[in-house]
Length: 335
Image (cartoon, rainbow, N blue to C red; front, side):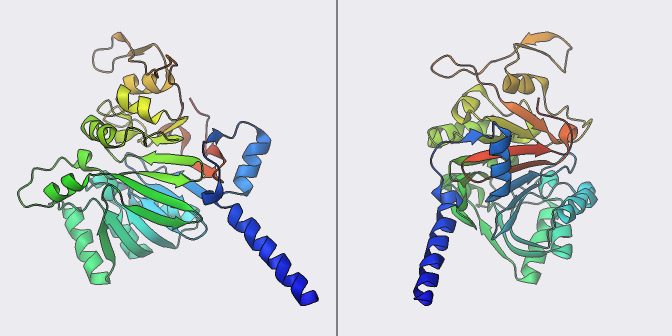
């Protein structure tokens, strides 16, 4: 009898654990609007995403109970910052590295990763590059026997705990064209774009995708772009975050990775004003006050998001159980 009772209790506990996973969460996402919801989300987190404070570059740490994934690796001269942030997060092994495109501020930390950490697999857009950093890490992958895969629209990576990364770009056509010798590359607009999905929560990761890539994403995935959180394209540059794209994504929260006092002026004032639904902004080029291109949906509702920046907020952490989510910053509050 005791043995039977033990088996029954074990099955009940297993069922409860399965139902608690991200994959069992209902559709639709909501912000953690109360302290109780935030505490519950933090305690039951199935997915943790950290936009690391690594200066003018991208490095996004994704952690589930089963896997640690790093999306981009910041710049060469920010390697010390990257190591500090990874060590703070207790990272020893990185199961998957996803490199959105071969610009230095996204792949610059690969030499550090391959030297200091155990790396499982590497994913990128599959297109060749003449970058010395790219050539260097490709040689190192071969020497270490680390598998490298090309991501394209339709690919899905299982990250454990019911969490997935669903690639939406580059398209199969662009991947094939870009792999051909002599192709004229536009790395930003060849960035891997994909959605992290955990139950009803989603986060769209965009690399440095600009308006050209956004238009192609709208043509192929207009109904699938809606996301809880948006990683601002190209560090908040005016070359990305078009009105039509934001209308399709309609995020509740936007995260921007940029260096303090960077030479590019990121995030650009017009894009920041668009995120915050501010009617006017001061043009960084001529100092004039101009009207913001506000985003509205078909009902006439105005898009307005909470915005966090690494230059102001430090490392930004998102935790979710697939139902609610919580955003915490090292310093300061959302704009």
